[in-house]
Structures are given as structure tokens and as C-alpha cells.
Image 1 (tube, rainbow, N blue to C red):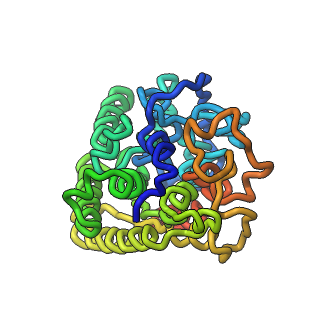
Image 2: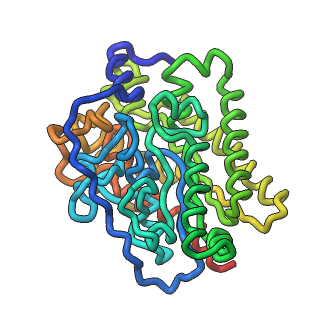
Length: 371
């Protein structure tokens, strides 16, 4: 299946993130105060991955893939954009608040963060990144290897404050989340020719699985003992994917593209099996959890969830067909109520959707707390 030729140029701008000329106001940090909770199991929360969990790290690097301008953040605290690719909070923000650590997870690269906020956890994620190192290079963002290096740097900073032994115990009692992979398939593999020249789909899935496993093992080496790994969403249902890869008739019908959903489901099964195997074979006392985001999202899109949405195939911002990042900007039309939409822009969910996804993720936190 080839990209609809009518949208080749928008695709290049949307997915390759060429330089753009929008005046971007400085991002304002979200509140990170301690929340009231009976839950004292977790010492901190650390996040790695892509735009689904990047609260604004890309604001501090030289890349066009940013969202620290309106209308992003219109339903966030103080209605201010922070670099989150949504109208409000991300799943990780809901999670940090739920376990009583802080109300939201800040970006590690924010130079204004206090040591107190650093100690209770940060996100190292970078929008447009992926498990495949080439994916991050395409977009000039932070790859997973660099995110790991930032975590090592973070540990050294914390160690100078609380000491080595306390730091190591602190890390062992922290929660870790990895959310990455969609950009690898939809941007790197299916939109560009480089990986397709050397990998079949199944071979690329195996490559991605191997890369994910190596990253998990690297986190183990750094002391992580509770890691949640997110699967892929129904990629064929993302509004931008429908627009870019459908023929003209299907674009108007706005139906999901099953080919890409099949790739996601197959990879998710492989990832879940790998998580199960690693749980059996690791001797560190570590615990891995697979987080299924495919099922709750497809249920919302197909109307099987408890909450019905008015629109499941278009984003709230702009036409909803293609706008994301700088294409969703202060001049864009914005729907009246984002909570009625599954998607905020043509790629990323609304706060309402992220909240529903968190409800599926919550069992991971509850299970660990009971251990």
C-alpha cells in the first residue's frame, strides 16, 4: 500500500519535521506538587519513549517536532501548552498522580526543575523518537540510547544529593514506563524506503523486538526493577494514517486501514510473549508488565467502550485529517469540546482518551503495590 500521492508533500512536512516559521512562546511547566494518596510504594516514576509520553523534552532541542504553542494544552493546567501532544494530560500524568508522586511528570531537560522534582521522577521521552535508532535521526530528536544516557546522568545528579546507596534503593522502588514503536512503523518503515530495502515486515518486527529487549536489559543494569512496556495502538486508525494511506473513497469514509492494525496486533503478541519470557528467565527479582493500549483504543473507535465519542476518526484540531505539530497551530480551527473526540490532532489522543487508557494501565500499578 502506497501513500496517497495527493498528500506526499504534507507527509514530508508532517513526518520529517522540516524547519518551520512559527513564533513559539516559552513553555510553562506543569505543577508537580505531591498529591495526597495512601500509596507509598513508588519512590519515583521514569518514562522513556515518544510523543505519547513526552511532556516537553523536545522544547529544549533543535527539532521542529514540538507542541509548546496553542492550541496544544488548552485543557491543561492554566490552559497553557507545555510540549505535550494533547489538549491536556498524558497517561503518565494520570499514573504519577494516581500513585501519589506528583500531579504530572515533567520533562528531564527542563532546566528549571528543582532537585525535589527530579528525585520524584521525570520523562526522558522525545516526540518523533522510536526504538529504531534511524527513526530519531530522521526527525532530529532524542533516540532511546540518548534517553538512557540522560537517565545515567540523572542518577549521578541525584547521587550527589542523597548518596549512592539511597539513590540505588530509590531507583529499585521506582516505576518505569516505555512507550515507543508507532513512529518506527508508520514513519520509518511504511512511509520511507530505507528499512523496507533490507527488512520484510516480519523481519522488522523481530528487529524492533530485539531492540526493545536490549533497552529493557539496559534499564535492569541501571537498577530498574518494575518496568511497564506499552504495546502499539491500532495504527491503521490514526487520522493521519487514514488520510495518507487510503484511496480517495476511503478517505471520505474515514475507515481504519486493517493492514496496519494487523502489523500492530502481530507485534503486540510478540512483545507480550517476550515480556512473559523475560519474567521467567530474569534472576534480578525484576518484574515486567505488558500494557495493552490497542484494545481500549480500538474499543473507543468502534464504539464498544463505556463512553461514546462523537468523532473517532478525525482530530479536534483543524480539519482533523492531517494537522499535527506545527500544522496544528494558533490559527487552526479547534472543536468546541475535545472530550468528545478520541483524537486531539491527527496522530495523538485527547486527554479524555489518555485517561481511559490509564484506566487499563492502572492494574499494573495496583498489582505492584500489592506485592
